[in-house]
Every structure is written in C-alpha cells, then in structure tokens.
Amino acid sequence: MPKISQKGQLMPQSPIRKLVPFAEKAYQQGKTVYHLNIGQPDIKTPQVALDAVKVHSLDILAYTRSEGSEGYRNKIADYYLKNDIHVKHDDIIVTTGGSEALLFAFGSIMDVDDEVIIPEPFYANYNGFSTASGVTVVPVISKIEDNFALPAIEEFEKLITPKTKAILICNPGNPTGYLYSKEEIKKLADIVKKHDLFLIADEVYREFAYDGAKHYSILQENGLDDYAIVIDSVSKRYSMCGARIGCLVSKNKEVIATALKFAQARLSPPTLAQIASEAALSTPQSYFDDVIEEYVERRNVLIEELNKIEGVQVANPKGAFYCIAQLPVKNSDKFAQWLLESFDVDGETVMVAPAAGFYSTPGVGLNQIRIAYVLNTESLKKAVNIIKQALKVYKD
Ligand SMILES: Cc1ncc(COP(=O)(O)O)c(C=O)c1O
Image (cartoon, rainbow, N blue to C red; front, top):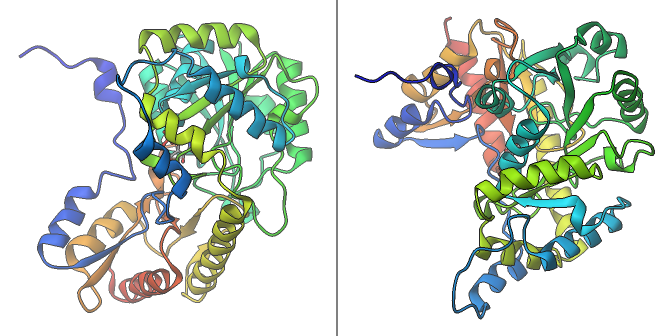
C-alpha cells in the first residue's frame, strides 16, 4: 500500500473532537450528553445575517475576489474603526474562517523548521496548523496558579533562536479565558521589535471581554505596523461558526501581498457567507450587550459551582467563553472517555475536552480539562454536578 506522509502521520487529532465516537455511543444508549467540549455557542445568529442570505438577488453564485469582496472589506474596516483600530480595506484578506487566516499567516511568514513561540495552553489547532506548515511550536508555559497571565518577558527571550519567526498569542484566550492587558501587549511589542519577529494575535474573541475590561488589539499599538498580524473571524462574534468567514489583517504590505497568493490558490472565500457576514456587521450593540451579560452569568455560575468541588482548581476567565479546570485525576483523557462510556446521573452525562491537547509540552495538562461555557446556566449547573458526582466514584 502507498505510504501516508510523515506530516500526515504527525498531524494531531483535535482534542475537542476526538471523543465524538464515545459521545455517539452514549446517545445510542439513550443518554443526554451536555457538550462542554466545543466552542459552538448556542446563541442565536443575528437575524440581519440570516435574512441577507434569504433575500439576496444573485443569479449566479460566482467566485468573489480572492481577498474577499471590496464592499465587505470596506465594511470590515469601518467595524475596526469603531473599535479604534485604523486599517483600510486593502489591509484585509477575507478568509474561510479564522482557521484559514492562521494557515495563510503561517505560510506567509514561516518556512519548514522555523519556530513560533506560543504561550501554552493554547488553542489546540495551533498544533495542527504548525504541523501542516512544518513549523515547530516552542511553548512558553503560563500557569493556572497565575490565572494564565503572560509569562515574564525573560521567559520569551530565553526561547528566541535564529529560527524564531513569530510570537503567537490568543487574546482573549482560548482555552484560558485570559485577557492581555495593554501593558502586556506593549511588552510583547518591545520584544518583537527588538528581535525582529512577527507578532500574530488571534483576536477572534475580541468582543468577549468581561468585568468592564477593554480589549487592546495589537493593531492599536503604535510602531507595530510591520510586525502585527491579526487573525479574526465571524464565527464566535455573531455565532456564525458555519459561515466559515474570517480575515487576516496586517498593515505590512508584504504580508498582505504574500497571503493574497495563498488566497488566490484557493480562489475565493464563500460568496453567500460573505453576504451574511457583511449584513452581520449591522448587528445592533444591544445584541452584544445581551450576549456578554449572558456569558458573564454563565461564567459566574460555572466558576462558583466548580469551586465547590473538592480538589478542583479553576482559573477565573476574563474573556472568551472557556476555562481550564484542574481535576483530582491523573489522566483527564481517560476520565473524559469514562464519563461518556460508563457514567451518568439519571441518564445524563457530560463531554469535556481533555486539556493535554492544548499544550505542546508532553505530560503537561494531563489532569486538566477545558470547559466551554456555551450552555445555559441550568444546563451548566447540571453538567458540573455530573462532574462532581463522577469525581466521587472515579478511580484512575
Ligand atoms: C482561538 C481560536 N482561533 C481560531 C478559531 C477558528 O475559528 P473559525 O475557523 O471558525 O473562524 C477558533 C475556533 O474555535 C478559536 O477558538
């Protein structure tokens, strides 16, 4: 039989999706499964976006420009301006989700064997995108005891080698919920300028900042035009994960010109989804106010309930809609599988994402899980109670 590529063999499975077959078995057994494993919000997509797809007047569902339709990019630039981010339409390439923007960014600035420094735990697919691009992830560990704050700058500097091309942060963070302060962004800006590196910020959760804190984008930082690349997406902002629309934003013209070549190779982002995403930009502020209020309530309930469980440690998220919880178990992979296969409370169980896949350092995060608080508070309470009851009887 012909052989699978080395790269293909190295591609990691998604820790978020790998337990799906066990969840399916649980459904077959008639169990209800609370999904805390995946960042698929249950929030309704704005009506304006749904309506735009229903009433469009296209005769031919044609390709758009590879960089995305100009009308849409102009409106995205207006959206950024409202967020005090000054970019023009030609600083933006519309992509098939933030996922493709990450691939384009990696492809545009890194060669095989180059290194990217990422504070871990990090969004698990950064491992996948790095493997696909032949790039090595160099993790810098952020700790649950510090609420996952940015590690000291010296920790980054220790890791910089001639192969280092970029630092990648996720702000607010998936899976930690950490929101970087302006001061932390400034420190990162200093270090990338000093060592001539790119700074990639995945800001797909920009709107999800809590407790009065304000998100500070790397694109707001003066003097960073040549270094900053932002990854963005409509998936979470408008609960439009299935639209598959995101964008890559940079004021570095060479980065944009290079990313455009990758964009041309895949021809065009989806046309109908751009129409929906353009319409979504007129979503009223009241939608976000309600959504944020809802997530804050969910977070508060989740953290309060988790803190009541003996032996569980949890960091308090300041943004996004995830948290990492440390459990009194040796191996959360096994625990998560066991929850689906062998445990229920009155026919109900819970699916969580084992956190080891959010680290690239082997052996770290084995006793942690990532929880996405994408369910209503009643369901969250039930789900946490299932974890609590499970921990009473689970044997490693
Ligand atoms: C941090 C982060 N970046 C990027 C993505 C990719 O999202 P999409 O491709 O749906 O825009 C996700 C999805 O969960 C994410 O959590």
